[in-house]
Image 1 (cartoon, rainbow, N blue to C red):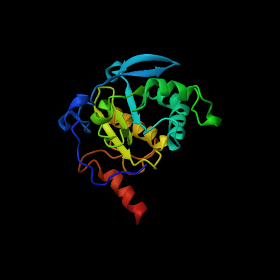
Image 2: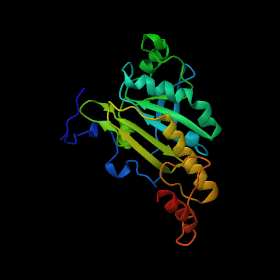
Image 3: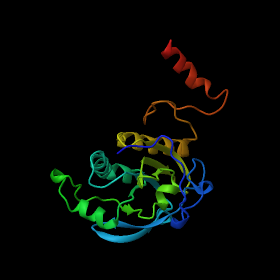
Length: 220
């Protein structure tokens, strides 16, 4: 599966896909969407707005029944209890149908399936959701490996998009949730490689000196 380095935006009017001005941007309200998802082994219509009041990890993968994708999907499922502790829900999306999602869940992991998954797997057959979040590869009709952290007020706070061969770190997604919640609770910002329990920065010229004096002495 190759990616054209010089893609030309196609005419997608027939899909009623929104314009670029409505695409996801950090610091702005996350684009809402509604789609059919596999939830607890059944089909259910869900919307992003259903989860107002909770943080949301929204992630996209290219295709069901492939190679990197099941490792990511299962890794996020394994981490569901950790996200729940943080008032965070996980939602997954690909351009496959909900029937394909269900068939994949009904296939055992040793046979290339993913087994039962505890978070919604949304079908984006029209490609509208993938377009809204800037991950759609138009020519292939699939999504890049995008991950988006949406806060409890529906604002997009973090995003990362990987090319097709590059799997994501669930631990890093959890770290981003922790950093956001630390900032929201304490008003202190989180430096590079921050982890819970390590030092943060008071955002002010004089207030930040406490952090940087220690940081500078450690760096020599």
